[in-house]
Image (cartoon, rainbow, N blue to C red; front, side, top):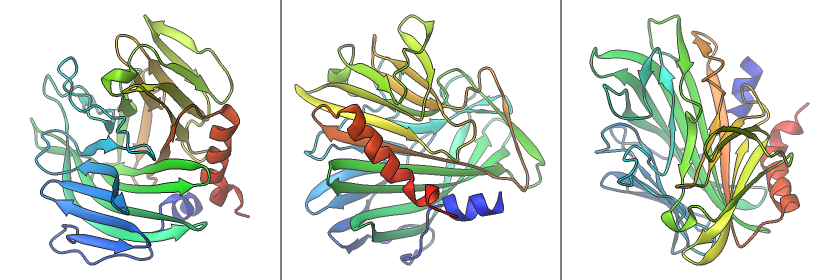
Length: 318
């Protein structure tokens, strides 16, 4: 496990200074920029925004509220009236019976504590920018701290092929003084992505193994695979969005939750509705995922190629 943690936690070897746990106003290099504006961290390339992350003045959890394709199409929907608890790209599960997903009936809260490192650098000649964040998962009714998380977010815009790539990594351990916590949840709990309205109903999901998936209820399906992708019309223009599960993740390949009607949703799950997962002190749970966005319809071999490139650094280790 020690080797796993050392090699999978994002390397933050070019950290910027922090003031009272708040990111510097901006950090810019290699055409990439990390900037803060009130309650938002944004990552841009040139004059174009890649993503926005909300961390302050959010009642329940920090999350990515905007994520753009290479041509500038945002594919995330935040807090729609039908499901106010759907926040763009977010991570939530149930911890020791406290629900951090639905945000109702005494929900849990992910409390932003501070930012760690922020950097702009390049990997395989592709510039990227990112930051890390410390959070406490808290039961607001009792004040009990349940889970400690270090979250790391990176974003880049690849040029060949032209793809927006966001990496989300979370390292979890029981809160101080706890020997263990148990993760459970509904069949959609995990890293969830709510698509914009124009992508509802008419798109098509596929996965690395070409599996149809198991119908859970209605239009909802569950399927295990190393990646899952959705191609649909976004404001009249075709986009493809794929989510990747890292081979070192617990219970790889992920169990994907998908639905297109009445709205489109995708989650990378740990199958917690059937198999609860215990996280013990001294053995953090490290999960790493990526979201890739193409303008137009990406072919299956294109998606697989980007997936392999994303996982290559660990696959090539001896």
